[in-house]
Length: 201
Image (cartoon, rainbow, N blue to C red; front, side, top):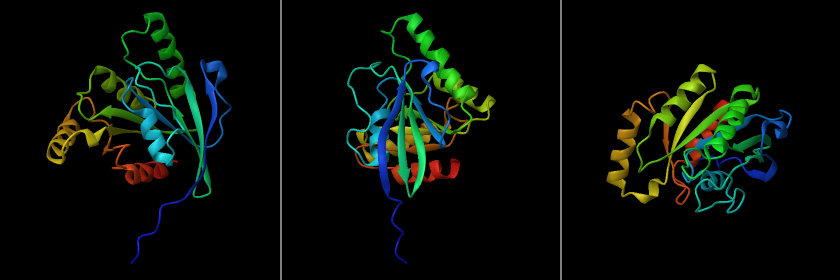
């Protein structure tokens, strides 16, 4: 039997951006939030998900994305919003600014009734830390479903990659969520990630 082609994406566009909770749009379609450390590859993964090269702007400078960005996507005739949250953990940002980010990112995650899933990005080559563990715990306490997308999997050879996926899958910091190996460069894991998003919406 021939495999059914994936649902077609007919719309993928920036809907709005916000620099504070006051700028959040009114709740609309189901939302999928993407979180992770600065320079973990959120923009690249978002672009890979929608098959666009520049929907979300990528930067080689950690900490550059300081807005929440809502991307409107219509896939298979169904609309949803992909939400790109600012990266955390960048040391060169002032403590007061980091505190502001933390406050309104928590306001988004805690009060968004249309939020269906949080996708935590983790560089496959790096070990997770307390930030990742606390974030997954925080989401679980608020009944927000979460998964972990391991990024930049193309950077390692297959055997080493498989070893790292197994290691991170057993790490206590990430134990609270299912794990997906992904690559924005090769498309690895993109169909599986879409399947998880569709189940959650």
